[in-house]
Length: 72
Image 1 (tube, one colour):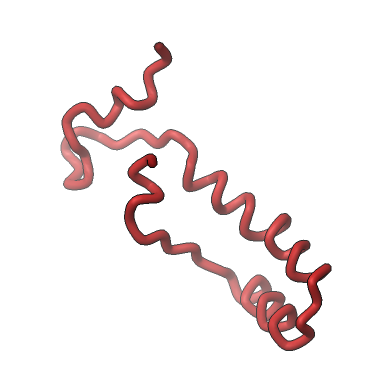
Image 2 (image 1 turned 120 degrees about the vertical axis):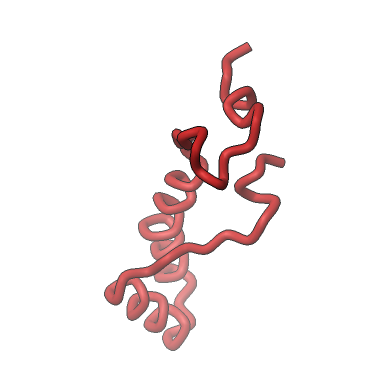
């Protein structure tokens, strides 16, 4: 597992995404739920999985962090 899935993930929703999720929960629609996952959550998950640059002076930087992204 990569580091970004070993710890808790926080995915933020803007107000329209929040109300769309509430609509899915109220309607109990499988089709709307799948659309929500594909259109809202999937892009957010892809963004979390993207390689990010972290300056060495930031507290979240760990030595060797860049090594897992190097092509072998």
